[in-house]
Amino acid sequence: MTMTDFKVGDLVVAVHPMDRSLCTVERVSSNALRAITADRSFALIGLPCDFRPATPEEIAAGRRLEVINESE
Image (cartoon, rainbow, N blue to C red; front, side, top):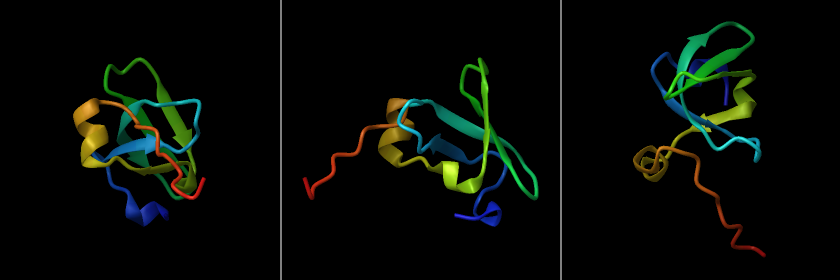
């Protein structure tokens, strides 16, 4: 994904497995994306490759859902 794939207000999740928060994009700059958690307790800052759009299921759950790798 590139910076132009994201806009302020988008719901995203971090792809890093340690963070399962559902976040809202707060700022998009030329080299970084800032997303804040729903409870505004913390912000995540990273490159576009560090985030992906939240799925409808994740939005309903309010967090990133684990994806089962079907090839295993």
